Each structure stands twice: as structure tokens, then as C-alpha cells.
Length: 324
View 1: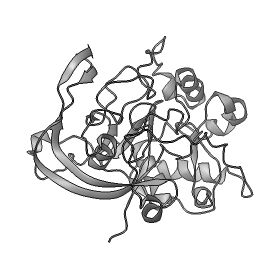
View 2: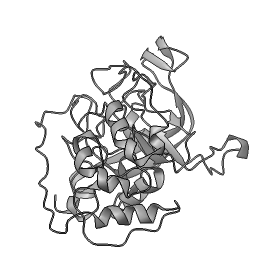
View 3: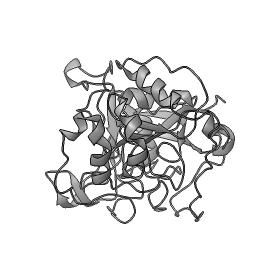
């Protein structure tokens, strides 16, 4: 718990604090982020122009004697039957993280038995047998149990671009998850399309909520004074851990749905791929958000560059597991 407040914890300024925070939001270029607590430290070097200034402004705005208590925890319920959290998670990874250890198949897929919307790649349920071939890689790493700020009962942070997500993880002595790590944590050794199995379940995870009406106002995202209100209008996040069935077999929650999660896209500069097949950016998004999209383990969104930020984009952190 102490370590949680040893780094900068950022939350989007939404309607709940819009009146009090609008003044500070206006002084920051782009979306304003609110720190819960900070210790004085220099911002990490980023490749995003202006990011150092934004993070420094955020850090300086927090009172030095801030002592905000942790939010009340959600009721601790027994994990679902498919969860087999590693017995060494706490010892190897520390509080708030789970140990993920297993084989990741580079090529794997599933056959849809019944479509909801084939054009948008939304399947009701899959044939209960994964199709995989070729190489596999043994992986062993630590992953945050919840989406950042990794606190049960707290809504995940959004509106951070890839550079800022990476820097925030580094402030905690962690890193962004690699795309293959994220996939393994989600589909488990069973290689299931959803973290909870083969049958799509909008009650298990925060998915399949209808599109907003009206659609997002992209012009509002170009004006610092309008961002908070527009995000608040669109916001359908839920508190981390609010859906106890939305958990993978290693014990990480909310991997599909709730918010999209930034990862390091390993196929950006994969030497084993022809250059034409490599993804355009090192930034990738996994898991999908609360809307009516595919929201499953294997796919990755590759169309957004490292400076992209939006109302449904968040992240979680990973870390190297201690060597045996």
C-alpha cells in the first residue's frame, strides 16, 4: 500500500471534479490529469513532445502533504473455478500483481460457432478447441491485477497516450506489457478466446454497451476546456474488480472490456516478419473497451500511433519476474 503512493497516480478529470479542476485543466495543453498523491521527483524523459512539461505540471499541482486514503475495497469473493493463480504470485511479484507463467503460441485462433456481428468480429460462442500451430514461447512475468491505477473499487485511468502510460509504469519500477504477455495472461494455457472461456458473456465483463448518442464530438477533444465534459458524457467505465467473473486463469481482472489497454506491439519491428507485414507503430491496444466490439484476447488494434489518446483508452503495467 505504501508503495502505491510512492509514485504519481493519474486520473482523468471528469465531471465529478470538473468545477474544481477546470482552472488547472485550462493551464495544461491537452487533457488534464489529476494526481492523487506524488513525491517530488523529476519526470522521465519521453519521446513525446511536450509530455515532460505536462507531467511536471501535473506533479507540481499536487499538495506535498496529500494523504488521501485508499478507496474502500470491494468485497473479497472466491475466484471463479477457472482461476488458478500461481502460488508464488505474492512472493515473486509483490502486492497487487499476479505471476503469469506458461507457453504462448505465436499462431492461434478459434472457429466461431455463432456470430453476433461477423463484420465487426463479434462472436457469441466459439468451438471449444483452439487451433494453434508453429512455435511457442515460454513466458514468465508479473502483471498488475487490475487496470491502472491497479486499485479495486476505483475506475481505471483513461486519456493517457502510449508514452505517458509507459512513463507511469516506469515510475513504479514496472513497464508496459508486451502484446504477447498480455495475450497469454488473457487466454491462459487453455488458449480460450475470452478470459472466462468460449461463450461470450456481457454480464461477465463490461462489454457490449450501446454506442453513444450522439457519437463522440471529436472537435471537443481539440479544446482543453471541453475534454472533461465530453469524456464524462461518454464514460461507461466501471470500477476495477466490479465484475468478479471478468478474470483470466492467472488472476488478472478486466482484461477484456472496460477500457482498451496500451501494450508494446512486438510485431512493429519483428525481424521474423516481412517488412510489409510489420505493424506501423510500437503502440498497440488490447482487450477492447465497454462498447459493442470484439473484446477478446488474441486481437490487437494497431491503427493508433503513440500520441493517440481517447476517452476509452487506458493501460496496466507488467514487470519482469525474478530469475530463478
